Figure 1 (cartoon, rainbow, N blue to C red):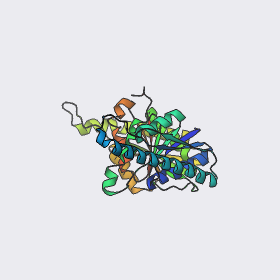
Figure 2 (spheres, rainbow, N blue to C red):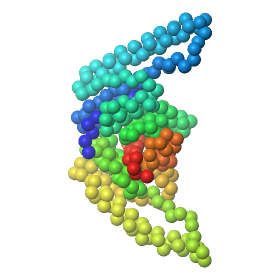
Figure 3 (cartoon, rainbow, N blue to C red):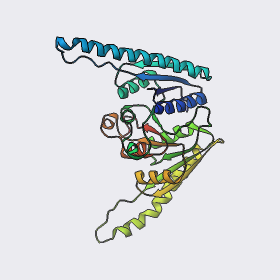
Length: 305
């Protein structure tokens, strides 16, 4: 898989810098175009203000325009700084819109293969209420979104340990392809299949008896599928391993991440964009909010229900 274009959201915050460093690393690794996208919007006049307030409104607009001009200058300086570090294929784009919609719009216009955004906070309450812009971008975007959380430097080896949530859907397999593409030389990619039999019973037979009759064959079948995927996607520079745990996906991924060190978690999100506007797939949303790593969300095609 070749990444031809990467877009990264820039708002000059510390979290934005984390996203930029990861985007720079990926652009360098894949020798690809990187666009620094800054979104700033002047709110339109929707209400006619009294004559007495016009001077105040004019001053307010002047200050906003001044800040936007300053941000454009800072964006240009940031591009020069990137070029001074050896990153030559860097461009900038300023979008007049709200941050979430503007970033998605820019990524679409650029036909970006990846959109990188930062998020505020990693622990405590902030970890439970992920930066709203990043969350809305993940929901709205048609394109894969990398929520950058770990401070991977542009000069670092890259993603050495990657976890991929695997439910064997076409979206999860696309997530695996992205994981292998983003993996650093010598990296390890772990596929994690979380499973749990439904709590149901057949009349006259205890649920446990029914479960025992299908659990073995089902585990054997999924093990064969998982090992086949791991074998097909392993390369001389990237080892892919398959694991399974008896747990609900959200719980299983969370506990696996807490117990082991990873640089990146990759998950697929099912459902069309209309539904994602209101609720991202529960596993993807929980992983993005609570994971202690950067998280890449790969969306299902609109036809993949």
